Image 1: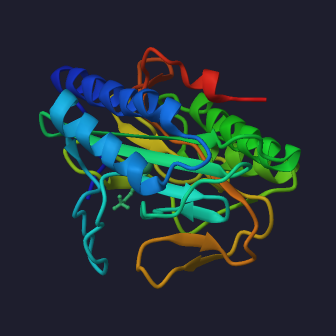
Image 2: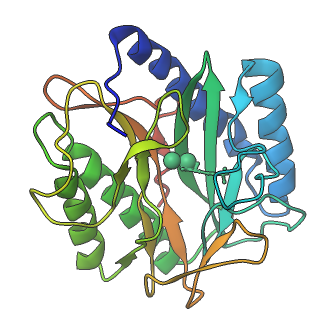
Amino acid sequence: MAISIKSEEEIELMRLSGRLASEVLDYITPFVKPGATTGELDALCHDFMVDVQKVIPAPLNYAPPGYKPFPKSICTSVNHQICHGIPGPKKLKNGDILNIDVTIIKNGYHGDTSRMFLVGKPSIAAKRLVNVAYEAMWEGIRAVKPGAFLGDVGHVIQRFAENHNYSVVREFCGHGIGKKFHEPPQVLHYGTNGTGAVLEKGMTFTIEPMINLGKRDVKEMPDGWTIVTRDRSLSAQWEHTILVTEDGYEVMTVSENNPDKYLQQ
Ligand code: MF3
Ligand code: CO
Ligand code: CO
């Protein structure tokens, strides 16, 4: 299937969906602290999305081929969990790092974004990983422009992460997004310059590198969703939905609380 090019009308709807997804992360930020459970964070986000924003939480009952329906409204991935963590009764503790991944549907269009959160005071090593993962995402975003190759995006992310002696997860990637949660293309977070699809104005896709402190190998948990690092090392991920513009990129998942504020030292 070809990569869809969004019309001006669709882009306007994608901007709204992107902002709403980002606003869920703004909303949940003050609730992320030691003692809170990821299940509580999910319930708060769910109610905010459904009752206040009047949007559909895309993860809830999402069931791609080969998966059972995802049972919650957000993904919460703690410490060595890489992605797709299922919110539950476990309490967050001082020093944890947490990814919250929000995807909403409004007017039939998706917005998908995630941020890392520091719970209490994580170690210097954990904070460094979180910050490098954030910068790796931005390296990728800055490579987006018409005529660039997807491989250019993956390449800069991989180079940046590996220069910091971290590894890049290969099994999961960014994705085209629009009327569908996951559309073509696959946006790999590693690769070679000048390879893969050529970017065109009007494409929308996510960039969401998963960066591990140890080895890149992953393992799926028996719940059928949660992905963890095989060596149990910490993992960090940030995600934005991006539009290819006339001369570069536009970040669609923006809101009042600029993500840069979450780059805690
Ligand atoms: N939001 C994730 C992504 O960035 C996908 C989560 S699928 C779910 O692509 F079912 F786990 F929610
Ligand atoms: Co995504
Ligand atoms: Co996501």
